[in-house]
Length: 246
Ligand code: MG
Image (cartoon, rainbow, N blue to C red; front, side):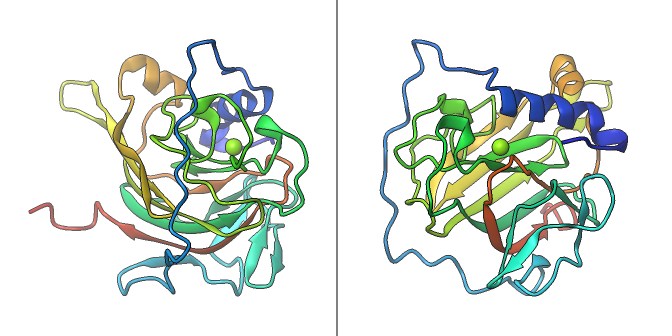
């Protein structure tokens, strides 16, 4: 789980929190209601014309290992499967719209945070949790589609273990302001087509900036190796900060 360079402090903190379950539920933690997503919901056949395609099932050329070496994940039937450490994109990004699909192992092993755990770190800092949350209780802000440690999903829209699931995520990074403060960012997340994070804030204050190792204009997308053979496919994004704002 070691990481290198500018990401080290934040990622080690985040990964340690994830691994150790330090955000365990308290007695007031109520699980989000379960909502079964539509069986016919389309995961999308592919990326729109202006997208950066990060993985189309063929190769790992957009990726490097989290320590900067060659990516070690396994290519299996058009998907890539967690193996030998996390992966990060070679390119770095600011505000983005991200689409990806993931599947937890069909063979259920472990429970809570130990079952189908992975995660998507925006700018190497802010994790949208990947977890097998089908009939798998854990603390709410650590289940699938949570902003890990900060915001539980509105509902639990998880599919069954081994079934493909989708995330569609709009990410706006926290940004420094002219007066030296940090403006909060935001996450909006759809899980299998169901809204689960409704423009929730990504903390931008001084303490939050310290926790997340400061803010950055751009950073890599990182996929977590939490020791479970989670698979990913059809990963693409659109750069939002490259667009006219009006
Ligand atoms: Mg995780």
